[in-house]
Length: 236
Ligand code: URA
Image (cartoon, rainbow, N blue to C red; front, side):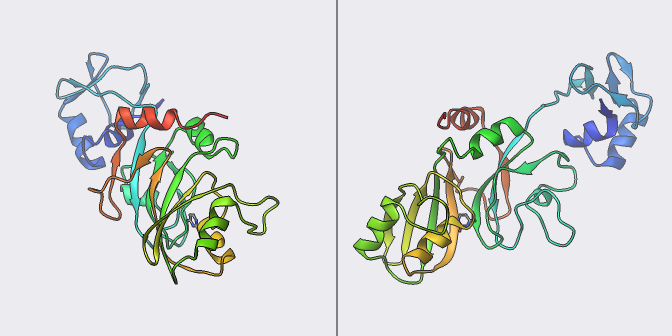
């Protein structure tokens, strides 16, 4: 159950005050009867809510691809810093969270959802979901560095990193494909071969590429096809 005004706002029919006015003007019906008040409770999954005669369909789960800008923390809420969820605006659903984390200075693909089960599967260390990073380095990699990154490195964890894939794009720019997601993993792997990451962007996650139309800070819903790809991301 939820309040009618919250439901209408989440479905982007208008702001809180607009929604109140729509209800007063009789533009909203619930199971065939005009809504009486914007704070009345509705069952978002089974009640038939019409706005200007059109059925509003509540989505239980939502999925967004965000192009995370630098300077924003990968969290739902934070007392002092801007969060990735706040980039979706104040009408965004309150149960949204980022699937995994990118460091504050790291940019690129971040999935935001309220589907805890899918998030759990994508983040499970047992499933090796691919993540592709574009890293700008302090200096070029040697063939020996590439061999080390690709075969697995000691970064101070219990086990060495899983084999990764390196693609050299320019002298100091690489793509690094990882199948795991340890804390600061890209930076620590490059540090382990005596290098330093000066800029880092995630360009793909779980078989999906960052949409090049999304400017930093912009987001869009995943398509059904993209969601199918994510759902098929490697099993245990
Ligand atoms: N590796 C890092 O070092 N930082 C990130 O945010 C993601 C991967």
